[in-house]
Length: 214
Image (cartoon, rainbow, N blue to C red; front, side):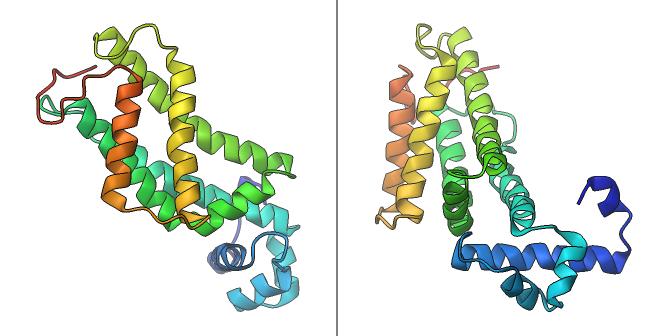
């Protein structure tokens, strides 16, 4: 439903639409995309089957709405306070990795479904890339700041590095929370952080203060 149409809904209409999205998230997480039925979404939302089509034309359309919510939740880990003078690169990267791992765990079943649908649906593939691009852009800018400040290896391509390191953390989380490989959380976050910084040539000095990098 276009934004203008959504804004024109009555309060009851918005509640019904939101209930359908919430129900769809539950059913997609439980059954995956291919086995999800619109009838199950309607039943979970407590509405008639036909009511679904008042708000959405297909399960593809409502799945995109669900993924918008996942994007918002996953991206919330970007909201990091400005670096304090005594925060080391280790602290900054560890904090970002911890927040991403926590958000991925919270959304693991829907992330698994997103990976599935992105292989055959162009619109969903774009949503997956948009989610990834948010993190890659943020990390690219961080690496460039560190290079300008003499903290990271200046010969590394910041964009390529951000893509590679983001993929490392993302696929590690996928293996952990979707495929079910067992990892110990603190050791996993420490290892990811160490690999992240060492690959950039950063002297992470966990217990040493670093100048603020702008």
